[in-house]
Length: 358
Image (tube, rainbow, N blue to C red; front, side, top):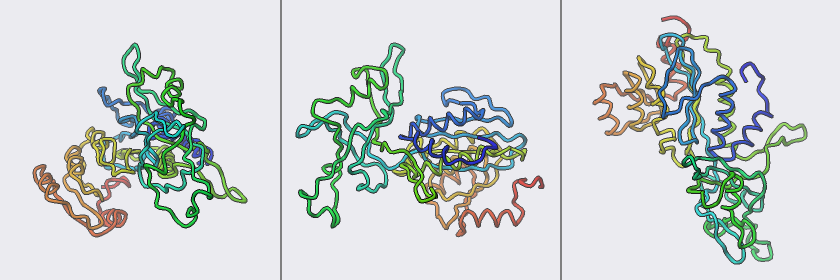
């Protein structure tokens, strides 16, 4: 991908592949592997070298890639996105209701519920499967229409075009066929196993339509999961164009999970994924951030930063201040946006050797 022109077709392929957060992460890992990045599992010892290219994953649904600086660290360039998208999580696989095979689902993230009606749907995610060698995690995605969430026809709902207040537990439960069908059996066959060997599932609904160009000259495009896989792919592409010409600069690309529900999981932006990676690099000086949580202080402490500046007028709470005092870290707040604050610091001499000067 390095030195390759940006391609809408490659973006479409990433959007089509990312049918769940697990699949998005697998697609990103495949791109990184092809570009020479080495996987560093969290369960293994890491042996990092200057200028090395690495990535790690967490929960199979978040991924962070980085290039080690070639010389003494002067700073990091980072780009972040998220792997999850608004969807419906499957709570129970097989149920029955009035002659239909059903699955119970719950909403995930900020979605437009009406867009899920009357379109072909499939299922994607992860299965934990019992094998002779132990429990395996297997991705699954039958590439065919398995379900739909049907609307009532206008004859039974004359108010359909005047605005509705949907009850997700009643109005947006998918139908998987006639009563007696088994989604679990279908997924087991797709994963190359038996239904009785499926120990746990983490599954979502996904649309079956592919990304495509729209417009008289194809000037627009439509796709599912544009939030946030478009950003994820664009930042990954930009990250891979980096040449590492500044000896002291490190580069990070990260795709977190669970942004749609607050980012507070261990694989989310408020988790420790980034700080765990940054812990391998020392002698930082200043951290600017718009995140206000104790994890920011822990990150700064791990990489020996001496000062945290909260931008956009964010005011840290007593728990953050107490933790910073305990770690001997100066805490400041700034009314400027991140871009303005960085520009002011740069123009006043805090340049991090990005131009090769002091």
